[in-house]
Image 1 (tube, rainbow, N blue to C red):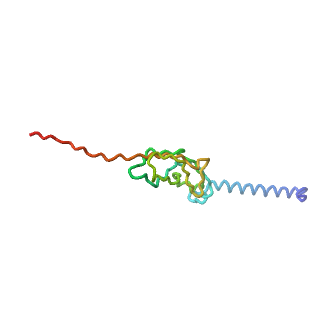
Image 2 (image 1 turned 180 degrees about the vertical axis):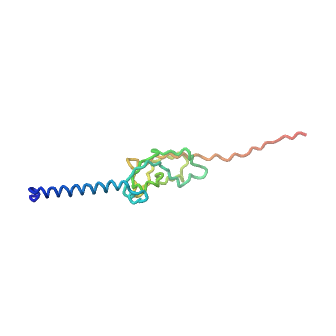
Image 3 (image 1 turned 90 degrees about the vertical axis):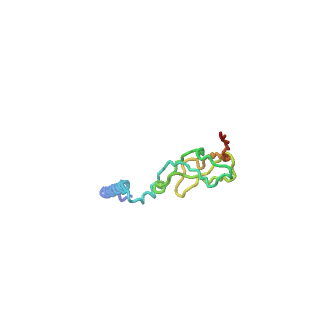
Amino acid sequence: MNLLKGSWLLKLAALMVALITYSYIHNEIYNGRKKDASDSSYKLIKLTAKNLPVKVRLETTPPDGYRIVEDQVAVSPTQVVVIGPEALLENAWNVETAIVDLSESTKLVSKRIPIESVAGIHVVGQPYSVEVSIPIEKIPPPATPSTQKTSQTP
């Protein structure tokens, strides 16, 4: 440091090197934002967030004589925010729960089910699990046609 103490020429040279380095780094960052859309390699590094709906995975069915009332299946929360590389999230349309086993259920099922994790994608906040409500009802017996007697008049 004693070398730079008295020499204005060396101080000026150090200042010039610093300005050139700053300019180079600034241009690299600015040009990095203008990446060509066809070059998707930056999408593996760039993290992004996306709000995705939760899909309940029902792989099993209730016992014979019962059915799921599919239009009344409820999930809370209905959507979660996930963070991950842009390349992984651009084709993500939903997050899925773990498989819900309904093979022995004959009435309303209310459970806390974990959200399945996908490598590289992380759920934001605390809802690593969701509350699921799946109504199950007994299938009504098939209606038997009533026999109507027609009277024949002569």
